[in-house]
Length: 194
Length: 128
Image (tube, rainbow over all chains, first blue to last red; front, side):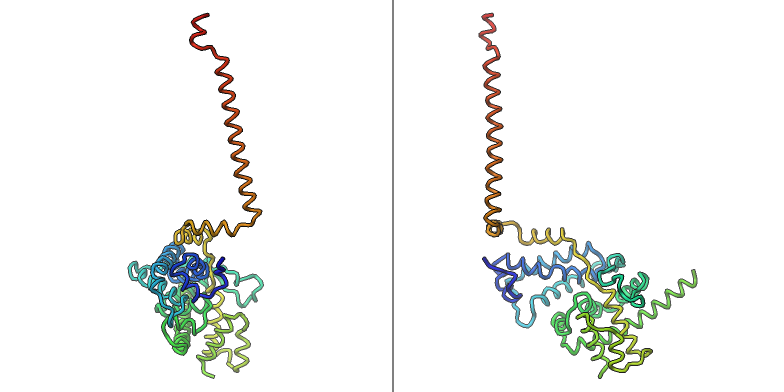
């Protein structure tokens, strides 16, 4: 019997054009990543489920026409997700606050040095600042820190060179720091006022 | 080394989980109060806050079913994956259930026949 788990993405894609089982293996490999990407872009679990379903429905519907040349399957999926999220933002023009409890991650563990643990308020504040960044910068930060991708992989998804991703990352960090400081000053003003 | 390169190197280290901001400050002799140090700390903060969320398992399962369905091919593959013991246990269970059903039906039939023999027929009632 065919062992899908042993095959790489490219081989699975070829099989998936006629074999649902191969598509199932690709689904298992990427469903969590695509869900996370969409969740951070929409800040809502319900929308993340809905749009993740659409990504895989669309991918399955177009897999016969997909040609791997230049764009790996994972990058193709992220591009579908990115387009759907962009449409979603355009259609609805809404930005919700991400529920903070979901960010109490495994990596914010109790053995972390005290100076490195942030308050919930600081985390909320950072997430708000990220949401004020332009779309491509938000995308870059999510791909880098949530999805843990290299600049080369991010470049394939965003259709930019590795050098361009590096420059965008630098500009993004500078802009985020500026935004973060502005938001922090406003927060302190509000606290002083109350 | 260019600031962009230092930040990129630090981000790669964070993704791999093997770097501390202090090590980078020391390696490149960066003043702790500088703009670059602030950006490195911002990157460290991002690494701690932007984390993977858990995907609901029932959603993953349900979407898989919607995408792939449970067609005959999948069913055959599932049966092939079962061990001989699992198949034997399954067949044994089906046989046992069929036996119990047959036995219960037989008992019911016998009881009905006995009741039929004991009850008076319309003709015998007329005679008495």
